[in-house]
Amino acid sequence: MSSILFDYGGTLDADGVAWLERFHVLYKECGVDIPRERFDRAFYDADDALCDRHALAGLDLEATVRLQARDVLAAAAPEFLDRADEISARFAADSRRHFARLLPTLERLARSRRFGIVSNFYGNLDGLLRAEGLRDLFGVVADSGALGAQKPDPAIFLHAAHALDSLPQDCVMVGDSIARDVRGAAAAGMMSVLVCAHEKAPAAGQSWTVRSVAELETVLS
Figure 1 (spheres, rainbow, N blue to C red):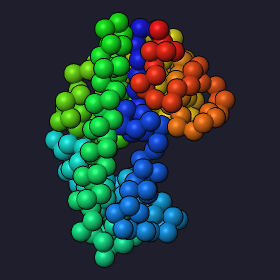
Figure 2: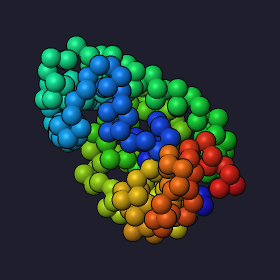
Figure 3: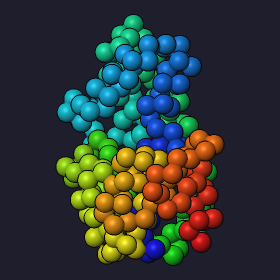
């Protein structure tokens, strides 16, 4: 394949662990133990409305997730609003350590393949990647919040392929979600790599499975 498309959250910033799960653990570690059902509802409500409530353009990762954390806490545990800074700082630091670990693998793969990102995000992913020093790796950033199409809609995958001057069959999508990444890629005529943190990965039609993006070279050599 000539092009590799990456999911962002849970794929490039963690080894197959979605933001919801990462944040739930982190809130508890920071002393905020919100009942799971209430936490999930507050998290998704904050996530869905973040770009409507806040001006996100130009924000880096930490500033973006600080707003998300503040909205979750305001809805579910307002007495802990002062923990938003700690939660966002720890989340961003963990993500940045992950970026640094993956960078050598990405740089080697980029010598022979074009890169893009296909992500359900808030509309500010291009600027966020620029702020984190990662934007130059990617020929296209297909952010659902900016494009108006969300995974698993094939349109967002095809937009990225077209921007990289690649045919769908020459692209592989790398992501941690079966519903959004694996099935979305298949609907667009692409192969896929599932990034799965679990010991036994489900067979969901993915072409390959890895535990981390750091293992990509073993399956895409």
